[in-house]
Structures are given as C-alpha cells and as structure tokens.
Length: 557
Image (cartoon, rainbow, N blue to C red; front, top):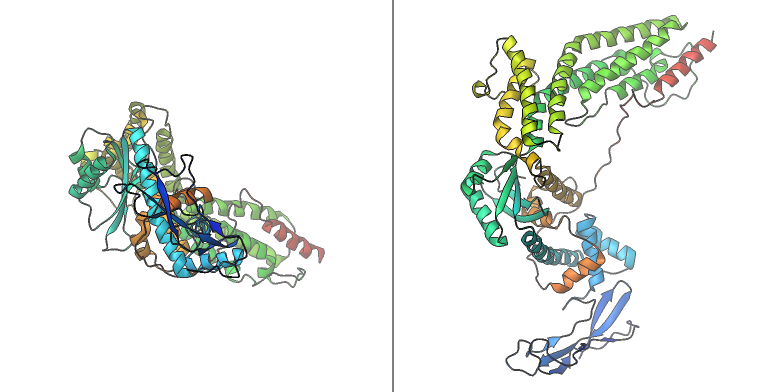
C-alpha cells in the first residue's frame, strides 16, 4: 500500500459515492457496495500537492455494466493523471489561446506556480485535449446543425507544400462551424461530390447553398450534387480580379517614384545620425536639408491595402505636397548655395512628377471606374435584380467607350489577359467585361437571401488564423508540415471557449487520448518599425525643422 509522503502537509482527501438516492446504482437501481481504495496518490494542483485516496464501488447486479469495480474520482482530477484539471487548463490556455510552444508552457507553469512539468507532459496534455475538444465540438456542431435544419456550405483548400496533399476545410456559414477538414491528394469534382454526400449523411441535413471562390472543380461538383441550389461566387475574389490591372500599375508607379527619389543627391548624401550642432553658414547643404530628406523618405514610405489605399498614388500625391511646400521657401532671403540646392530639388521633383504623370492619370481613371462598381455592389440592402441592373449600366459605359475606339466589347469574344503594368486602359475595360460575364451566375444571388454571405473571406480568415498559430509556435521555421498534419484539428478548435470552467468540463467528460504528433521548437519573431507616410494629414515636424535650419542661417548674417 502506498504511503503519503511527509512533504504533503494538507489533509488527505477521500472520494466517496455521494447521491441523493443513497447507495443505489444509477443504471439498474440495485444496491452499490464499497469494494476497496487505491491507497492514495499525489495530485498536483495550483495551490500545492494533495494526497487523494480514491474509493471503488460496484453494483450487486451481475448483469449491470457497473458490476465491475469503478472509481469515484476527485472533482478536480483526471483518472490516472498526476496533475489536476486546473493545471491542465492553464497548459491548454497557454498553448492554444496564447500560441506558446511546449517548452515555453513548461517554463511559465514553473515561473507562475512553481509546478514542475516536462515538455513531454505538456505535449501529451495538448494532444489529449485536441481529441477531447474535437469530441465536444462535434457534439455542439451536430446540435446546432440539427436546429438550423440546413447547411450553407463554404469550402476551400490550402496547399502548404507544392506537390503535397492540400488541406480542405468545409464549414457551415449559418452556424459558423467547421463540418469537416480533410487532406486531399487532389480535389476533382467527383471527390468533392462524395464529401458533400458524406456531410449530408453525417449531419442528417441537406446542403441548401454553396459559397466558393468559383474554382472549376467546385462548380462541377455542385452541379453534380444539385444544380438548383444557389451557388454564391465570392465577391471579394471577383473584385480582386477587377483590381488586378490597377494594382499592377500602382505597384509600377510606386517602384518608379521610390527609385527616382532615392537617386537624388540630397537623399544619397543624408548625414548619418542626428545632428546636434547648430546650423551655420558653413554647415553642409546636406545637413541643412536633412529635414527635407527625411520628409521625402516619409513620402515614399506609403503603404496601402488592396482596395482602399494605393501606395503609388499616395506617393505621387505626397511628392506634389512636398513640392508645393518647398516653393514657399523660395520667397525667403537665403544664402546662394541654399537657393541653388532648393531650386534644383524643386526642379527634380517636377521632372519626376511630369515623367510619371501619365501613369498617375491612367491609374486615377481606372480607379474611378472601379470605385463606381464597388459602390454599386456595396448596396447590400438592394435586390439582386437591382444590383444587376446598375452593374449593367457600368458595363454599358465601358462597352460604349470601346465601341468608340472600334475595339472588341462582346464578352463572349474576349480572352483572358495577364494583368501586368503594360496592360492598357482599354484592355483593362475588356477584362472587366469578361470577368462580369464569367461571374454573373453567382455574383448577385446573395442579395436575395439575408443568410447567404457575399464572400468566402471567413474561410480565408480561418486559414490565416490557423497558420498564425503555427507561425507563433515555430517562428521563422517552415510551418508547412505542421500545418499539413495539424491544421485541420486547430481550425476546428480555433473559436473554442478557453475559459477554465469550459476546459475543465470538457476534460472531465472525455476519456479519449490522441496519438503522438511532432512539433518543432519555437523561434522568436522580430518587430518591425515603420515610417509615418501620411504626411499630407499628419505633421511630421520635418518642415518645421527645415525652417528652423533656414532661420538659423539668416541669423548668422
């Protein structure tokens, strides 16, 4: 019989059968009898170690499932586990919620509570919880799908390693639940169709609509399943294709302007470090113009996003702003060397802006058309018929321009063209006409059903969030293998409630272990500092510093 260690000072905890019905079997109603206890074992909690003696009982009915002796476990213990449920909960929170690797979790548990736990134990706890969490989530998903009575299926695949199987995730947009995650060597229409049928059989509910990125294999698989159900084509992907020629031209404008500004002699000769000496007539020109050099660097540090802010356009406007501000200083009495340098800089900026003006104008023209289309599609309260009517007005305007130029404007006769910076404005219009014709079957149906999503972005976000988990764990190492083997599991647990109470209830209700899986060591991430580029809206202080430098020169006279 095991003996309580002397270092455990707390009173021994005994487990007993406690029920309002007394010593009565909950299954058959016969009597329960006490059989034996395990002599006790150590259980490590956040508040210290306990010595827990577990009593075993059995039902007197020979045919009852509880006739074999069963334990009455302590309320914070997991059967045959050394650490309490609350310790497990902290391990799980650190790993799944805060994305710490096994070594970091073990170190934090020691730092915070002085509980010694090995990396292998942390790994086993996390793997145990993966299956326990999946069992819990599957039960919840089944219940919610049954209540909904229909499935609006969203699907997409991610291939972390070229030539390797892709991870496909199938979700229900009505309940925001992951229905299935599977690695597929390939995903032809027949394979996807079989998965649709598997999902319908698993949940006992029909697929009533599909949301996808309009891949050909998905189109064919949905037609095989039921050609009459709505199939929504992701509006984000449609707009992403529309914006492609604009993005290519903007990127070229950005690169050109940045290259030209960096080639200016004042920028190349910028003093290193901060100047703490007073500006005098003998100060080098580069030192006097140092604030302007900083302003120019801020001007070309513009960043953007796919649809709203375009860095090439912003840089062009920033340089126009800098030029206009510099012209103010021409009217002030300044030393001759400063006047020459200032005029040279203004001339250089004007030459740069003039040489890229045609590209900027073409970019703005295309942007105007794109923003018109985007404004039409943004009216979520309109019917699909009304949206389609206004999109056709937009298309008519493009077709009319092409017709005036004697260019092809029939969508059926237009072919795909790569959206490079060399594409002309007219060719961009042709591609937009072709795109709308290609997407028209699934672009407008979401407007007539409030439960349908307009985009498949939730699936993209799910992929990004699950990848972010592995990047946080593995740092700069290649996450492809880990994502391939564990991405599906984590995608299903990504919105799990990681409170102490919920984790405890899931663990105590589960007895399913998980097989071993490999994890890689954690590498630290690096922080990146960025320049402030919104110089037209936010005062950087560089012009004030330049004016101070000029004033210091005038004071020397």
